Length: 407
Image 1: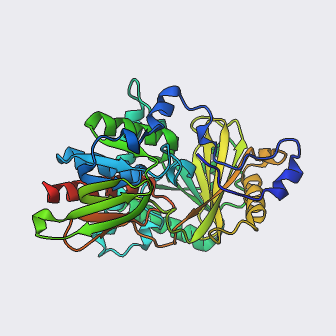
Image 2: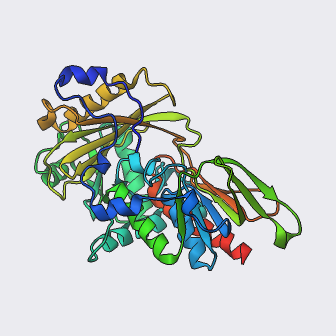
Image 3: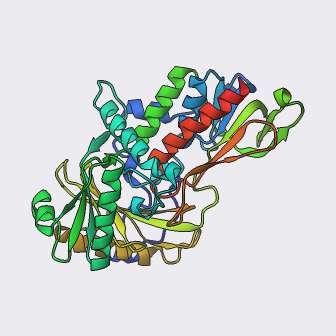
């Protein structure tokens, strides 16, 4: 995976002999079995140039779409621009398992039943992934730790109360906690001096993103899906005719052409980014069951993910996509907020400091968009922050829908 450029000048001053590494830490320590599953065959090794369903993008959404289409009986090939799986948004995310999308369930209008349904559906996905991780020989590494949303102001505390009510109403466990309960849960290591109230969500946790991708890739290969790397698209076009003869031509940069009856575009939120999101990792020996936590205030929050001998931190105010001049400023702010919540890290410098450009908005809703006029085709969109579980959900649905139309 190629690291994304970042300016870490301010952090270098803290630890000149050991500057933070400018990429996500996920590749460190993965097993050979995971590494093998992330490897991709080349276009030259792909034997078929005609498939029922072509999926562009081998991230969580693309692999899930391929599995959905294959389960519906279609022949499927996934085409990834990178030479390995994990170079996109999933491989650089925070590794948090949280139900829902990048907005509060309490803010979703009651009449929007389709959007509200994403919360219980992704909650079930979360629990099933954790259960799969417990099976012998499992590749995916996931665990339930619970999560804490922390309110430092009266307005935020009121919003947490509304969120707890909304989650319980759709069958998701949630409880309002006092600062004393937070302190007890975190053995006094989390600074609760500014906390007014907290929302405890026991059915949330963490995941190692590369192991999730390897898990999905293994499932796809076992089902007979072809996974192809180094497949950069130069053009794609709809071939129209009678409905049963419509399809897609995919032109690759190396000159090869792939013909498909159906198409799923799952290039992810890094394809057309509008914001730059920042992340750090600190060496931190926290218990395996230490919960995820974050400041509940909208637009200024950061997410904290303990685990694997680290504390991952991501978020804060977003920068402008493609602009790296203020990276050090945003990384410094994340460092300061981390030390506010975990005072024991006051003298600890980050081991990693990276950034990722994403399409993201406070009210962004994951959805599918119809491609073309006659040929079956869907684009999976809106998978910015908090897009892993919705990506699996929408990917499976999109795969089933497109495969059903080509059968």
